[in-house]
Length: 137
Ligand code: CMP
Image (tube, rainbow, N blue to C red; front, top):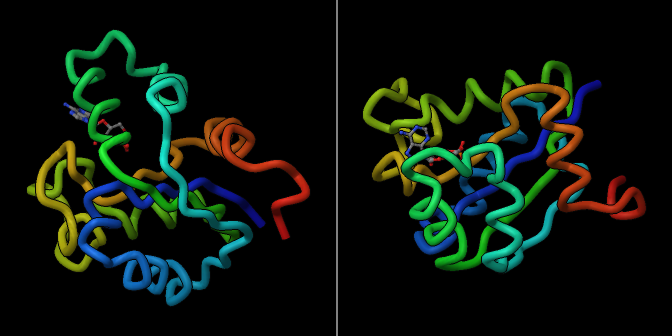
């Protein structure tokens, strides 16, 4: 069993499609081991995306991620990390395959509906960023 971190971003929360996105995960046999709706601070968003701090889009990414609440969840299941990435589709929704979350709910590469860990090591670190052991069951 693997675990991975999912963030439903401010655009998708604003569109009121949280339930529809969580349903995609459950329908694909991913279990929600923890979930919470939170408002990120600027410091949270900067720290979470620190790996992108030298990229030209970092400032906009941070501003976007604090523009409204997000829903962070731990998804658990067989091949959870790569399965979640398949369900999300390409980072740029214009390149995302039909039927993926980003093709169906995202508007742009910034407002792209969801984030998912891109490696098992990052999944561990991203889960620890948001959740204490006692919050996971
Ligand atoms: P995410 O999976 O959350 O990881 C970093 C985010 O940066 C990415 O989704 C996009 O929303 C955003 N981003 C903006 N521009 C780019 C870009 N050119 N390449 C990759 N990510 C980008």
